Image (tube, rainbow, N blue to C red; front, side, top):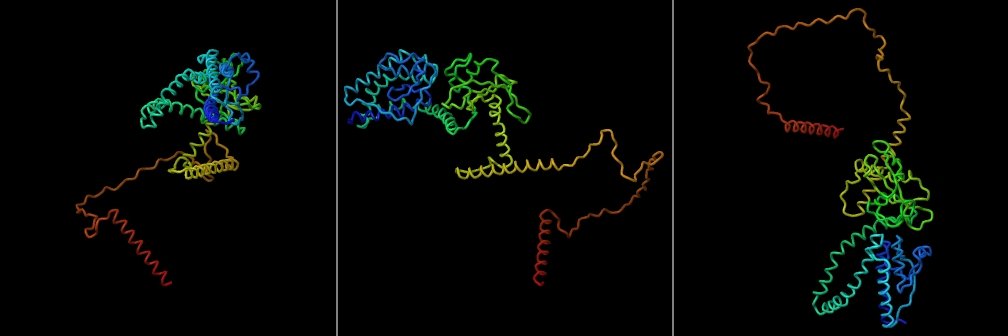
Length: 436
């Protein structure tokens, strides 16, 4: 039966399920996986001791799964149906059960026991829910009524409290969404990748050997690996020869791809062991560490191609204001760079094949003499010096080379004379061509 209360709950479910839980799913820490809308793995439920004896059993189960390092995500394509209260009495009883279940979850798994930082942060919000409810009823609703009568002071003050939080939440969510969206897009297309990540990247490690499972920072997970996990592998040739580094990896959780594996890869400098770079990898099963190192080292070849394109074909020499102009310039520059690379490669191979073999002379061997030239026999005679005549002194007057009737010649006069001569020659040619 549809009435005003059920329609209000429709919007409440739409906001709470499709909005808030979608945001929480970006951090893989959905606060509550409702029993009416959720699918659980049987083995995971058994690992946490089964269903608890509580009013809000779905809240307690969700928080225990998060405590064990599990992931609770939101599936936007799922379709589910539920039955909602149709009168106010049943509605109040339902919300009372939800509130009691929240306190049961806090009692069973306090937020400070959560291993994952984001899961602890999201569960900490439950402490603020009672205060938010009181503020909403006693401050926001009266302020909204006063705003309708032209008194916006309370609503404006309430809205200003949200302003400092908005940039922090927006920047954090945007950065995490951008990385996860790129990886998800590659995985949906079946593309394997090796992507560089910061040292504070959060990953969920699998329990292997001495490494316990759960949420880790990238640098902390790599630091927990034993010394035997590091191997020296080549990342490819560079400008100074073979680039060799120390490499280590740890298995982490990823999407449900049965034919792929997910690793946290680390590259350590042999000269400075404190210089470590981190990568998230998605590749086929039983992929070798050397193959992952080679893929991670391919970025140097790409950067070198960019530098070459900038210097030879003007990849970054553009002044455009629209995407179409930029795209045309970049495409033409890359095409020219590819043409030059292929042409240089073919020409170099041809010149190496057609180069004649010329034997190099020995270091102490004298150069060959031309035929008919022989060294003269006997001692070499030194040439006699020539005697110069003694100059006679004269008392003649000094004559200047300049002509007083000739104007001095400078650059302008010379150019003018050249132009006049060219003009006369052009007139003479035109006159001859006319009479011919």
